[in-house]
Image 1 (cartoon, rainbow, N blue to C red):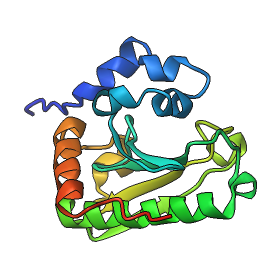
Image 2: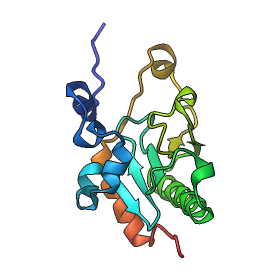
Image 3: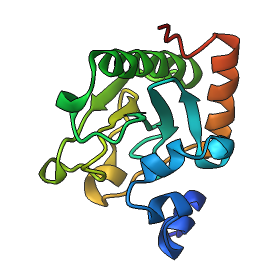
Image 4: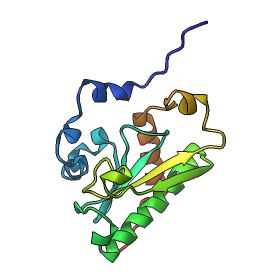
Length: 173
């Protein structure tokens, strides 16, 4: 039987030790405080109240996170304007992902608290995971392995270009 390789070059930073942003108590706050590093940190968009960033350890190609700028633990601590901003960014991210990746659906979710699986329990964020018909296969079911078919930097460039052409995000105050 021929041996096959799955390439996931972005994982090396995780294997060797966490990136600068993950070495801080809250990588979301670090990324928010460094707008000059948006391309390096894969921050896709910013608004006055929130940001959209790539999940650096994705479940699927195009896995994005939407987070408020304020370090708040849950939705109850968010203002009405922050909640509106977050949902509008979720909408715009879904539109961009659907048009760029031609995905068939999405998982959109919020893990609040460590017991619910929140990797950053004190800074609420929303996961947007593109899905395709039949994208669950033996790799993810039997071997706990995710196959990501495109580099994050390549998709980042595509989504940034799409956003510029389509005036995203469409958050107005």
